[in-house]
Length: 375
Image (cartoon, rainbow, N blue to C red; front, side, top):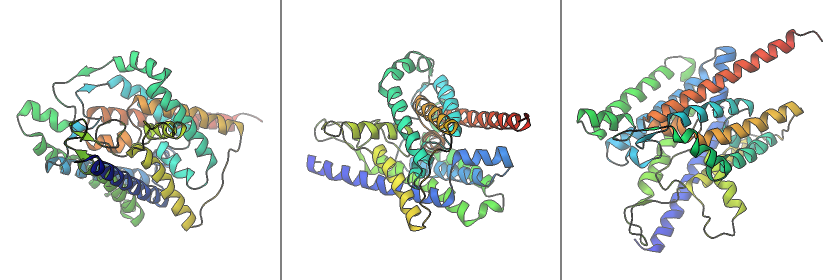
């Protein structure tokens, strides 16, 4: 492969990633796909419809990714989620922070990107704060604190932490075969549970669940198959092109927003280049905007009160710090990471859910107290 061929392939990978994110944004806006909203529906109303949509997306992502592994197209170990180091404390602390933050900020990073496309100025502020806090935790003063505290607490495995690799190491079975079996069982069970309710079999839920899950799998293929170069023309090393982590990547939006801000601020620096994460963040907002404009649902919206602004600012900080610390958000760990059947992703997702539920219940308690107090 020549340098010219590599440049052409890089453009193809970036455009493919942008289009996938564009579709993600349009589908998420049409179906009201939102992890925080789904959890809030269950906690406040006992309505599981949107959570079943999210579980269907998760099941689809697990089925699809492990099918790619089974057919030898990708390996979980080539992602950031399935390494040998299990940073359990980072997953718990970061996940809990992110879960609380997304409640305060009216949605996770991906939801705020979707809301930007509909004219929501609150989401613009949240994303600016997420970018600042996230990049400080990636590369700045927050990174130093993170590395010497929660990241220092971990344990190492003899093999990758994805379940197929772990079970394969101890049983002697091929990890690819186990990926096919476990992916079918775990993904199939999630999809079956999601579709067990009649309400969950509506056109909207099927589009949101199957569509977004399939887009996560497609993003894995773009990065891990299309974007894999066995021998770089300059270094002669195997590389995954146009990724920030230098490994194969799928949908994830906290670090993507942080890297996008760095790219825009230092655009004249030739060392700063567009990556899958950066174009995916842009594509998500553009997809939502296109849908909002086409359906005439685009509306400008701002903060109502100082308390509203405060909550969104605090939520943005918690999401930026927490998302980087936990190596992903509700999409990065909840769909992309969990699709690899990674132990850390499972722990991070459980912590995100716990942080969100705890914050929602705290808000409900505060509202109850305020309502009961005499005026």
